[in-house]
Length: 426
Image (spheres, rainbow, N blue to C red):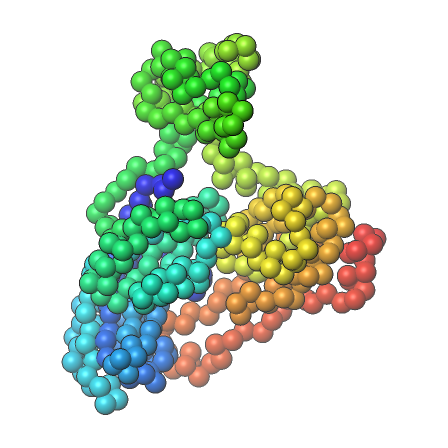
């Protein structure tokens, strides 16, 4: 089920290339971007930055080709609306042999959610373009503090194409998921889906009888303690044997006092089963605690691998697909869990046994994802890896133009002896 839409200004700073800009401020991209049309096809990002650098600080540039016009369209993101106003004055100027048009980017952004978890930015872009919608940029959120987030902002070249995409794609079935595609509206604020957990208004009930307990019976049990805002009892995946649920449910009350009162159900018997009732805790928090325990442990953990460097916008399902692609021998039950470790630009892969982990390490280490060379080794190697800040490409200065935009690979590569020690666990 799709979660509620979050406003653009509430979204963390993220870019289509997965790199966060410097500074921790949030940006309303609806008012900080311009679209430049009719650029010469040989005008690359660096030339665009040179041309517009006098207007202000450029955070990001994305371009696409318009084949029928033999020209480019660019999306330029600035840091403030005043810089956008300065960029608009560049409209109708001649660049090469073409007269460019600069417009404020309005009504061109789509909010997309409930797509398959394995989809990354490239898959989303390919999906849109296969249906005839060119994408200027696809931006995924950082998963640093919540690995379960799954939405994206997709910028199209015009309001007309954005309207057409929303009307065509919203509600479409995509690999069994009911896709949600809407025009982004920064003024539309929705309550966070985890507000009840944060405000201590949500309780978790475990130990429900799979067959006897229905949603109606559970409502009758929890409503005497206060007004219920939301009740979620996940249905059983196998209803053929008469099961109604998976043995647990989440109850969100209107106020914290009612949730506190509902804790009286703990250890009571309901439909011949003893219940366990507690305040619901945030899964992201619990997952971060698990990551910390693994990273600080001094015990050997040969069944756990560290994979790095990867973007903090890459979801667990994308990582799972990547691992299975590089290690086709891997069966679903062999990879027990994936934990994101954004502080170290990586992920922890937990396998069923040491042998499987060693085989996957051989398959993944020094392989590539996009243009990134991956390292796959033990937990200690991931813990020692520190993300390096990429050079700021958007501030166009003379010394930056002449400097190299690439950085040397300082990661120590594993030798045959290293692999031998790792495999033999010496």
